[in-house]
Image 1: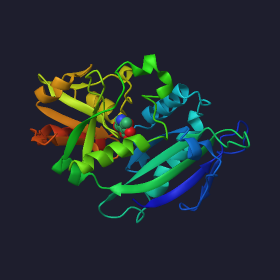
Image 2: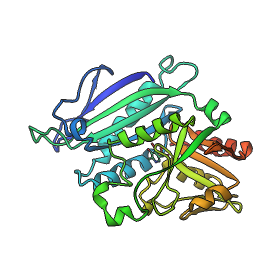
Image 3: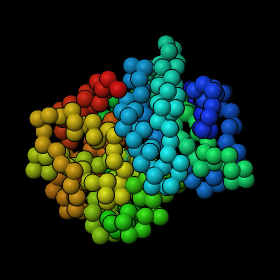
Image 4: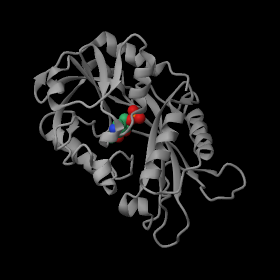
Length: 295
Ligand code: PLP
């Protein structure tokens, strides 16, 4: 990862102009008393950049708004975020900024703000690079199934656990990925304590079952995936369903993918040490849909 650009975004009610303040991408812009730092109390999104445009931007903005609502944060002003993310995507797409073997992405985050001065939310937009996902899409990943420790109805029974919100508190997701590495795997598929298949720590799961592509519903405390949504929308000839998946369905599925903005659709080639069938042709079609998006 390389940081390419950083904007501080002024989220105050009345500002002159667009509120975008470009700063050095490695500049320290968050205070030690910001609740995003001290409590992980904020929300974020990451959009991939293709041909100078942030992909699925409207879906990312809608999810930012959804996460903010779940966390009772002030509603984000979509027009301000849209302008900043578009500008960042155009900037990082100038010739020579992104190197061979990399692609660019834009992370944008809003915290509850400073714990001492109630100055309103803090916002920033970061342009950065990730590895070109072509390699991982071709290789696939190995994954392990891990218990998330919550029931599938957690959003309704204990909404304060914030399942389904894309909060800045990703330490648990990072710990799950470390556990996967300890077990010799690359990634994780979370399941609920009562046997529902959920999502990855940074991806949406798609399973092919009886010829249909199936992904678990957001009501089970998973993020509504922007990548999965565009895969489903773009494959007109393949049946798709948003429906609960059980642990046994993972064994029954004849193909599995983990989908995310920066990587696209990545096949699972091994689950809990067992080799899984992959479908390189359908994977390539999914990624052609994703890489070909206009916005
Ligand atoms: N689920 C979780 C927990 C994630 O962190 C992510 C992305 O980071 C996703 C799903 C996939 O979302 P998207 O396809 O919108 O990137």
